[in-house]
Image 1 (spheres, rainbow, N blue to C red):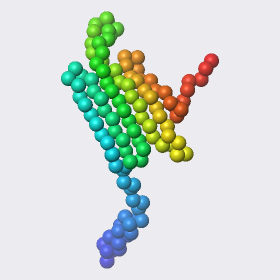
Image 2 (cartoon, one colour):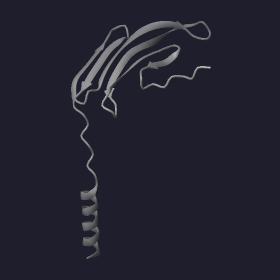
Image 3 (cartoon, rainbow, N blue to C red):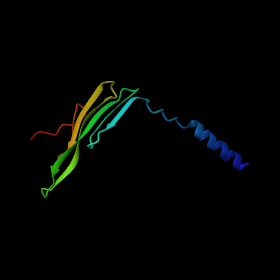
Image 4 (spheres, one colour):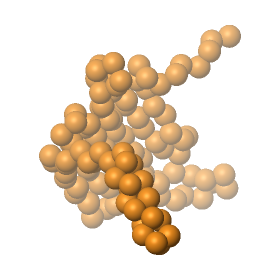
Length: 111
């Protein structure tokens, strides 16, 4: 009898748990790998998220002035914020690090 009560309690808990929302469907997705190491990629979802990115191979010098290849990335993404306004972030990443700009990105305080 105790087993039946425990089983019924577990069924009730599972039924009361909120259902996970379905992830947004992907409307478009493209990826092109280039032979020299670069790439182009983009996607768009049904809830208005868009992302475009490309990578290019670049030779840079390290701290010891030895050359090596890095992938320089440039791109942007757009989404709808909680107030229903579209937000776009543009970014690039290179040997100096990751850099992003957009209305939703905090600006450093000026001295």
